[in-house]
Image 1 (tube, helix red, strand yellow):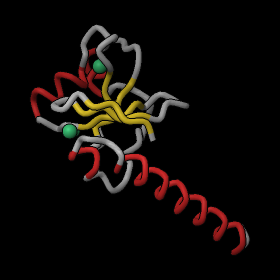
Image 2 (cartoon, rainbow, N blue to C red):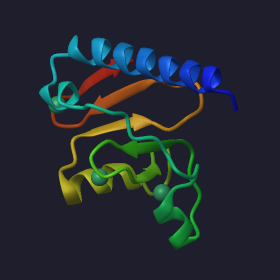
Image 3 (cartoon, rainbow, N blue to C red):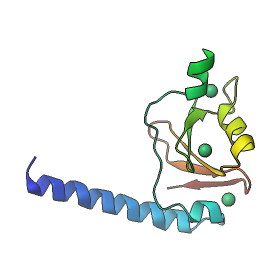
Image 4 (cartoon, rainbow, N blue to C red):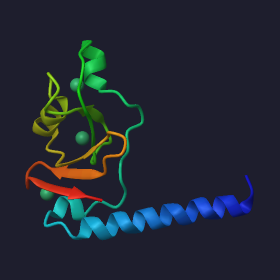
Length: 112
Ligand SMILES: [Zn+2]
Ligand SMILES: [Zn+2]
Ligand SMILES: [Zn+2]
């Protein structure tokens, strides 16, 4: 990779971070406003469903600890269970093409 390519990549990331911050500052939720970086899914699976041999519908990523778990349309609702266990407030969609955050305690939905 050339130096120019690397610069280009970095510029794109800066631009992306800037837009992310601008958009999340417009929310009324302090939890979302405090986010500095977006946690993204390492692997596109629900870690708990894998352990329990379950299936899931959609995936969400916890913005506090980065764990990826299944949504409320899934039989086990692992992300909501994770919130009740840990009080980690904000999740994002881990679905490709979806760019939104959800805060459980404030019930705030934010696109970025
Ligand atoms: Zn909040
Ligand atoms: Zn699950
Ligand atoms: Zn968490």
